[in-house]
Image (cartoon, rainbow, N blue to C red; front, top):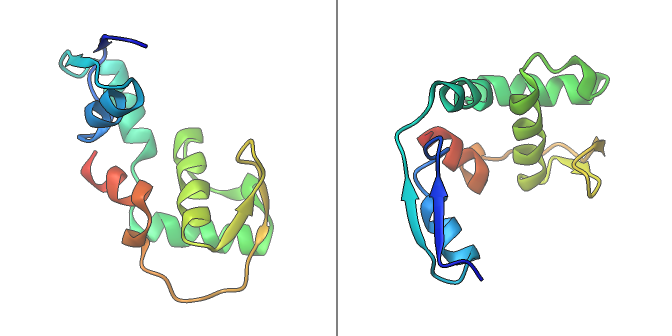
Length: 118
């Protein structure tokens, strides 16, 4: 059990400190201001509805290799689409296939909501 967690590069999203506190059984959480490196990472995983839609179409038409996002954004898109019940991923978050299409609201994905706040 940890009694203290320090985010040296800042927080990826507003809820990250609370998640760390819960995961560690109530540790005190400290966060320094965002570093330039974290800023670059954040910009690479921002997703909007259009990027998510484009990623889904790409998956439907041929696979994950064609998703025109940075690697962090590609993984985030796959995870959001999985949470929405539109694709299946294996335990390592590799794309397995597209599920039957249905109308969804991206904000039903907890990860998508977090990324909107980032």
